[in-house]
Amino acid sequence: MEEVRESAAWVALNSSHVTIDSSGIEKVVEKIKGSIPKVEWNYEGIHYFDNGPLTVQYLFVLDALNFCFWPDKDLNYDHLANGLKEALLNDKSVFNADRLQKFTGPQLRELLKWPRPLPLEEERVRLLHEVGFELERSFEGKASKLVESCGKSAVKLVALVTQHFPGFRDHSVYKGHQVFLYKRAQIFASDLWGAFKGQGYGEFKDISSITMFADYIVPAVLRQLGVLKYSSTLASTIEANSEIGAGSEEEVELRACSIYAVEKMRELLSIKSGKEVLSVELDLWLWSVGVQCPSLQHHRTLSIYY
Ligand SMILES: Nc1nc2c(c(CN[C@H]3C=C[C@H](O)[C@@H]3O)cn2[C@@H]2O[C@H](COP(=O)(O)O)[C@@H](O)[C@H]2O)c(=O)[nH]1
Image (cartoon, rainbow, N blue to C red; front, side, top):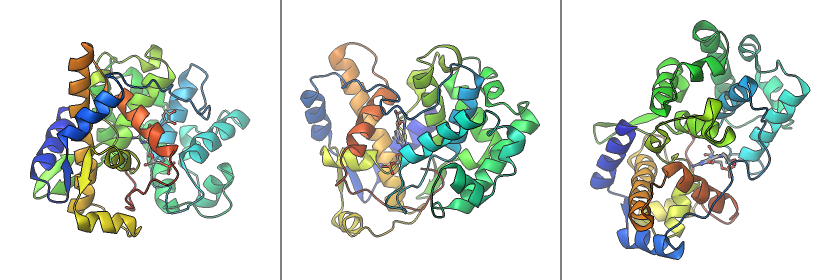
């Protein structure tokens, strides 16, 4: 994901509100004694898995909806992953491309057993329709065909997903520069890799190309670890739980500096351990630390991207 790495580095070098503390990175690497605490993909036991194409369909639908839970304080990612899993266990055809195109808000809510409207519900439904429509038009209705056409390349998969599905085109313009973040497209590749344990639909010869997934949890963890520092205005905005506009300098810096910081951490860990460390492994560890810390304050941006 050269365009993600390069544009994130550009933001980090030109940022006004967020800085990366390299001594903070060194301290984290020391604290974990040079190796990333191992976190199993699906350590929570909330994902559907049958080792076949239906799992790929499930993960694609999951990552199409994998954003913006915080406006409902009782809702989180687990509800989505588990709700979609239960729905699939009840009805194997629930995520068929033709059915995805017909979902309504109340039906999605019912599927997830959620008693009130979901955050950005209209957008969630629109994105489901988009996924169903384009899968049917270009991939025989099957996300597994999409993955098969990538020749075991995660880079190709991210490119194909962002080309075919506009909802996955997570990018921004920062100080006149186009910045690529591709959170949900990259996490889809990583989820396949994690779920299928690097085999079959999860085999990618270039998984090391994927960066961390710039969400609202990992930046907060990096700050807590002393890796990211915020300007006093940004810090007070986050502490006051005030919203930060999508595409604002602050928002892009929070996300891009997280990507750059994790790349720096990965480089240092690779040197110290003498073996290649993956950003996806660092991401899962950092994310799991964040979601197990309920007092963690994160930035709030209404966005369909994360
Ligand atoms: N960077 C990063 N962000 C991630 C994930 C995941 C889930 N990954 C699964 C894959 C295997 C594991 O077993 C995990 O279950 C969700 N998110 C993001 O977090 C936010 C939700 O937070 P909260 O409101 O507290 O549930 C939201 O932006 C969501 O998009 C990740 O792995 N990395």
